[in-house]
Length: 345
Image (cartoon, rainbow, N blue to C red; front, side, top):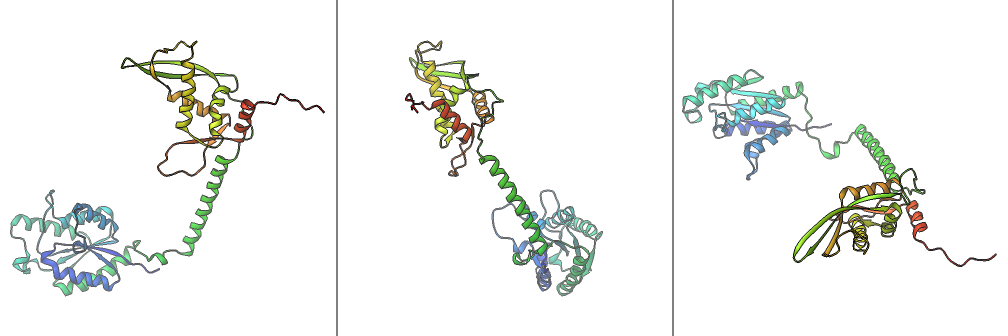
């Protein structure tokens, strides 16, 4: 499979324009993709973040050292050295190209202060602890890069880049097909688990006339003052299901179901024989989250309800519930009125 490798070129820039041009030409002739500062797009993105991203995507890293150390970062090292250190840290194969005779570099292409020259000497020594080649001029550098990179690629295989239409080997296609089959099987099992109708109530759990205690908060206003009282009421599971069941004959959202139950409880609170305060205005009842959660869990455990399956808009984040076949049958037994007329045979 034909691969192309991305090669990061690191160096100072102004003093090595011709040399970088020769290196880029050499890389293109090897069908490699050069990456360097002259190819970076202009933008407001943090410079080092951009450089790191390009280095991370590169297969090989070349550093060219001439007569200048280069502009320095806040850490006090040049961008060239910082790039080099990052490539080494990532384990990217690196190769250095060091000027053969630093003393013969033109004056305009060397550092003017002693501190920068000292840092350049230290950086050159660091690079030379790994694979390096000397170069004399731009043309010589280009030929050295060609030979050196061929050797680097041969001894340090890298993933490289492949055209999308050639990336799929028969083995890869077979593996993907196998994974797709497994995913389809799992999706089918999940769909069957969530949509298969429960045909019989599970009477291992509390139901019918057995009672459940619900914690509620009753709020209201009187003479422009807000009031609140908290308490509990007991309901049978049948009464709760009779209230909620009809709304789930199709599908109903959880907020609608909860509001329906709270309206039912409010009517009980305002009844004459209740012990709750009935002198407020704008009364409202809120079922506690714990109590509401217990209701949903219990109805699911009884196999009376299941999750809704209709497609909704992306903005609709509500949970929907619907009756199972068992739930539908049980609701009919609770709510349907039998005929008073008996057919005589």
